[in-house]
Image (tube, rainbow, N blue to C red):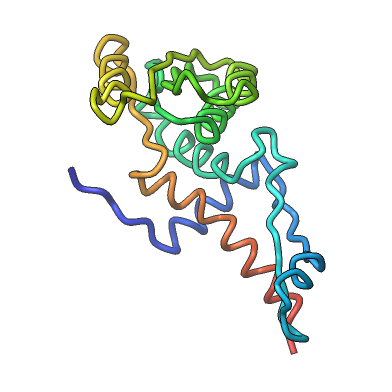
Length: 184
């Protein structure tokens, strides 16, 4: 399998698409962490706050970009993905925004809030036992089974240039905001 590498141009295109759905996450200076770390004067700690997003994670950026760039390929087929929660809720939200059915494979032991959030955006969830997955490969087998039986398009939470480019939008936001703060 060949994976296309995301380039900066892909991230910039993703930024335009992401802005149709979300405002930039705030960049917040953490005085408490600076003090705790004993940083020298002039050294700063900045935190990107994705907690305010509908899914509470930067993984939403990659999921939105993936969905937007795969609409033609998806057509009226469902999307299948595996995730322990952050990408699950991100791709579920993206599916809701673009009117696509999403089926997520999640570990039975995922936090309840991750199940609730993912379902709240309309996704169907199928579970597996993460404790034995290293022996059985159940997560990947179940995801492939859904793709085969439901003719679903697979969305990878990490091995995909569209997901990577979308997630990279957060990095662009950080660079742009800090550049504006520290111009001479």
